[in-house]
Length: 434
Image (tube, rainbow, N blue to C red; front, top):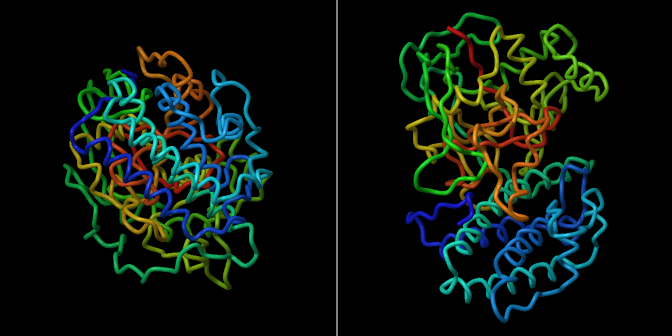
C-alpha cells in the first residue's frame, strides 16, 4: 500500500473515479482547441495538457502493470510526464503550449481509452494498485483546480477579457456584518480596533502541546503526516478572511508604496513587478474591477480578497498590526470542524470567492515554510517524487478555495506555493499572539 492512500468506505472507488473524470471533462467543455492549447506562463499548463497528464498518471502507475493493457500512444509517455525523473525524459514544462498536436479531440479519445481500461481492470486490482487509483483521483482533483486557474490566467492576457462561463447573479451575502455565513463558534470573540482589523472578531486558543498531521482512516497525501506533537503558545485567529474592502484600505493607505511593511524579498518583488493591487484587479474610474472565469466585474467589497502572494499577505498583516498564522495554529483551530462546510467547486461553472468560512473560498497563506514533518519518509519509486522533493523555498496554505473540488481537503491538508505566486485563489486570515 502506498503511504498516500488509505481507502475508506465513504464512496466506492469506481464511483469516485467516474465522478472525478467526468468533472474534468465538464470543466473543459466550453474550451476551444486553441483555448486548451495555449500556455500563458511557465507556472501554468494548457488545459489540454492537464487532461492528458492526469490520464498519463493512471496509465503509468496503474494500467501499465495490468496484463494485456496496450498504451494509447507510446509517445504520450514523453509528452505528458510532469516531473517524475524516475519515469525518464519529458517535454519541457515551459514549452507545453507548443503542443498543437495531439488535438483536444485526440486527448479526449486518450481519456476515453484510459477510462474504459481502468473500469475493466478495477475489480481485479490488488490493494496497492487500488491505493494508486485513489491517489490518481485526488491528483486529478488538484489538476481540476489548476485547470481553472490556468485558464483564468490565460484569458487575462487577452485584451477582450473573455469569460469561460456567463456570470452568476450577485450574491446577497455580506462579510462585513456580524452575521457572517461560515463563521464558527469559539471562545473570546472580541472586535479589534486596530488599523486593518476593525470589524474582525477573534477566536482565542489557549495553545499547549497539541497534535497535528493526518492519522487514521481516509485518504491523505504523504506530506500530511506523520501525526506529531507541536507546542503552541496562546494565539487568536480572525473569524473570517480579509475582505476586498479592507484590502482597498491597505492600497489607499499606501500599502504597496511603503517598504516598512514588506519583507526584503517582497519589497524587491513589488518594485520589480510594479505591483499595486491583487492579480486581475484593474482600475475602473474611481473604483476597481477584477477578471474572473465569468468575465470582468466590479470588485465585491464584502468578498474575501484573493489572488495575493505570500509577500502581499505578510505585508498586509504587518500593516494591520497582526501576523499570518502558522500552519500548526491553523490546523489546531480547524480540528473537529466539517471540511466540506464551505464554498467549494461542485460542478462546472463560474467560481469567485463569496463566503468567509475556515474551509473553502480562498486558500489561506500561513507563515510556515513547506518542510517535512518529523519522521516523514517519501514512498519508494517514482510516486515518491509526488511531494517530498518540493519541500524547499515554498510556504504552506490551508483550507481550500472556491475552485477546490468539494471533499478534496481536510484539516491536515497542506498546499504549497512559492512566495511570489498568486494566480491561485489565495487569500489571507490574520492571527495574533495573546
